[in-house]
Image 1 (spheres, rainbow, N blue to C red):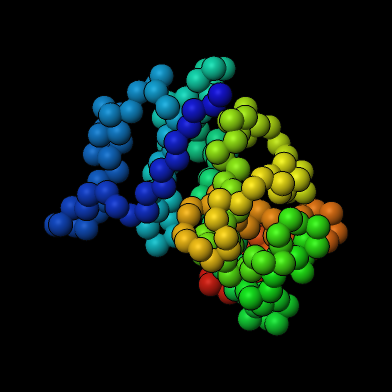
Image 2: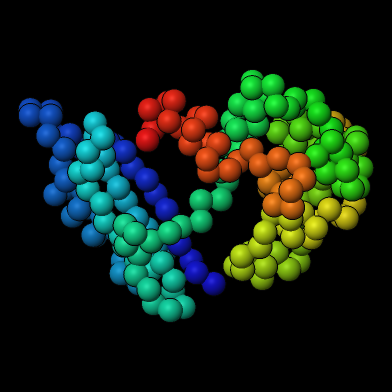
Amino acid sequence: MPFAAFFFLCSVFSVSQAADTPDVAGLELNLAQRLHADGPGVVILVARDGKILFSHGYGLADREKQIPATPETPFRIGSVTKQFTSAAILHLQQEGKLSIDDSLAKYFPKYPGGSQITLRQLLTHTSGLHNYTAHPDFFARVVHPISPADLVAWFQDDPPDFPPGGTVQLLQHRLCIARSDRGEGFRPASRDLLAEGILWPAGHA
């Protein structure tokens, strides 16, 4: 299984107090001493005022195949997507296209118990849905592509861990149900929506 870690550093390395000049050479030397060619893959990028000052890969992106990490290596970003999906849901609510108090059944009529679960509960980890990452075969599955619809079908029949709203429990798939590609429901975390509704207006082209 590929073993990779991703670190993104933005203007956080040493600065010469005399000339306020980024110590790129010092950073590069420090990293070379700490990160090894046969270690887990790491890509570090440092930028200031929109200009990339340093970008380099260290270690292996795939330890089985001995593929080195480079600035072009794609990494799994995992939970970094959570806040973007949440922001997209709230953006759609602001546009009047949904309400976070809508039931899951409104978008997935066949989802077991969906009439008792709201989008708000999905956003706040209080839906009671069982976490699919607890499945024994999760790590065998996660390395293979899967559509949102197939992913939902995989976990939707799991018994809930608690009644909706009963407590808070971290839920990895809390909003992947909102990304069905079967023509039902909605796709709030799509690339176009995030770009046009959130990132571009914020100045992130």
